[in-house]
Amino acid sequence: MKISIFGTGYVGLVTGVCLSHIGHEVTCIDIDKEKIEKLKKGISPMYEPGLDELMAKNINERRLHFTTDCKKGLENAEVIYIAVGTPQRSDGSADLKYIEQVALNIAKNLTNDAVIVVKSTVPVGTNNYVKSVIEANLIKNVHISMVSNPEFLREGSAIHDSLKGDRIVIGTEERDAADIMQSVNQAFNIPIFKTDIKSAEMIKYASNAFLATKISFINEISTICEKLDANIEQVAEGMGLDQRIGPQFLKAGIGYGGSCFPKDTQALVQMAGNIQHDFDLLKSVIDINNKQKSYLIEKANQTLGSLKNKNIGILGLSFKPNTDDMREAASIVIIQQLIKEGMNIKVYDPIAMENAREVLPSQVKYVNSIDQAIQDTDLVFIVTEWDEIRNYPLEKYTHFMKEAIIFDGRNCYDLEIVKQFEIDYYSVGRPSIIKEKILI
Picture 1 (cartoon, rainbow, N blue to C red):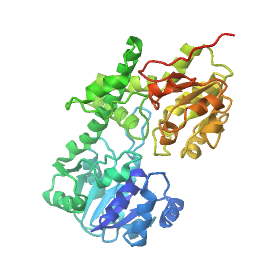
Picture 2 (picture 1 turned 135 degrees about the vertical axis):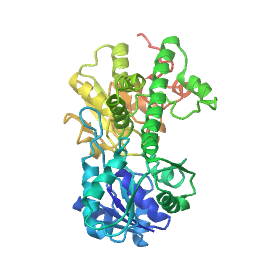
Picture 3 (picture 1 turned 30 degrees about the vertical axis):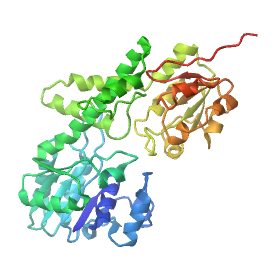
Picture 4 (picture 1 turned 45 degrees about the horizontal axis):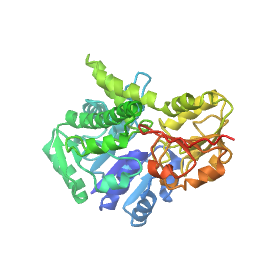
């Protein structure tokens, strides 16, 4: 089937690559000429495991194309995806300006009947609004059908989630459009759930809000565990064995970040407010998460007293492993606060340092390895649980640091193994390990 996709950001590009991989002819459209030229050469604008290889394969097999020309990109398209950004306004609501611009571009360039698929995360009612904008500006007498098809991609495993996801949600009021979308997605061999448009739009927000709630809940339990000398990992494992709860998203840490959870939770609170519903539960989830990002600094201050003029190593910058995404990353909050309090900061991340330079204070020193990041430091903060950090030999902390003191925001190391080394180790929701001081 001939498919066009507006937007070559995270969602649009991954969707286009995976649709071409299952046999469709896909053209991705974007206004950024420099990005399109790089994409034509197989150069991805973001880091995502497996994406570059799959993109190059389908470009070479002539199923995947890129253009800035709307007219050319929409030529004979049977299905048109809208996958542009919906940035957050100051009040937390979603800004639809890019969606509106795409709707106008479709209206001015569409010459045949087509199914319009909104892949972007949008407030309930947006699909109907997009349809009205397109129909009011069509230059040809063509029929359009609207479909809400929300994405459920996790950064770092987006290819897997596209090819082997839990479900595909199709929301539409037209049976023919639903049948076309079932045909488009058939080769994925993933369960398809069909519903009305507004319910499909809400499913995306409700799913992300629920997952964010699980994260904030387990972080609150971890705080209680610390005060009662319990172990959050044991508690979470025992909870997760209950099939009604499950083990996913019960990992204590320093909060969620990225492009989805922070933005979508705020947007849902705003949506609820628009219909005079005070979403107190979700407001608390957001508040807990914001506070959690400062957890490591608060714990270090409580444990060591003033951190002023300390040399600190930061391991991990991206909001999660296997991505270079710095949006709403805990590292931003931590480093800004440490710089403000007069600390000297060295940082290391396997992938995200280039993006980090755009959002972190200029005083930060970037280094090329974990060894360099912890060399001659007074303490280390672990912010992102990259495998490289998880597998780093613990004896190296004792070798490179002035005194091995670690504040681990992601519980990277087994407590029993840490006890074998001369390390003071503070993690989240678990007993601290303090090595014995030898008095001379």
